[in-house]
Length: 385
Image (tube, helix red, strand yellow):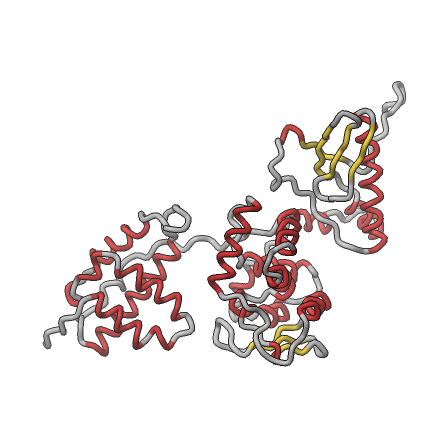
């Protein structure tokens, strides 16, 4: 039996990076992983001396290490990817380089995969984000966010868009290269075509000038300033996929052709619709028209504010719905009328309304109450059933 060639894990990783990683689309991401592993003492060991306990020690050390950007522990998903990289390197060392007689990673337990994210974009978050982006020095940001929600494209796909691959006449954006290695044609809604038109169509060249790191930085700063927690840019794709299902007009195969998911099992994690939308299916009573009207006439969170002259009731989900009066009851009544008019106008125009959402703005919960657009009539005494 031949003696394995002396090569440290450090040299093996750098060799793997220059010979294998460089041929992958995820070269930049794997380079980050290589850099992380090189900081660990395991990098100075000879590949032939590394055993399963050493890999297990590396795993546990990384899981206990805080992230430099968030200060929170390194995620299980990150450690799993680093272990997969090490496993691939040891496989090549075993088969091609002759640096080790076995793969010490193969029998070590990987951290349990975290559950898939189910973060939905709240209505007020979307309004705050779009308002912030519209005032951003880089005008592109609002269009990138809007297209992410409208097309379900990944961040990388959006940033690689080329004008020569966008046909506004047929309503198709062609993606010659995607994450899963296949090309894809993305159908553009009327809203998406309007966004491209506002950008000013060109014959060729990149649509957006943002780099991946530049967009990540802009997104992180925005969320910090708006005090929006735990919202990733990729969550916009999740939101867009969920909205496609909520249209109730497309089947899963049609949605997969739009989003580019090869695995239907992966796509199913986007189908968890909000429970409020299932209520309509459970409510079998009443006419269709009655159900539609009642779905609009729901209470919304509001706050009472006062100044020297009058009392004001502000409905949080509608910037233009405010009631005023000399007394609290008068202001509440005025706000109810304003909310009712707003909801009925939306019903007449068949426009969408936000779901009630009181979880974002920094308002004392004790000051928030639910304003019913249809005030309940007090029954005269003696007429109660």
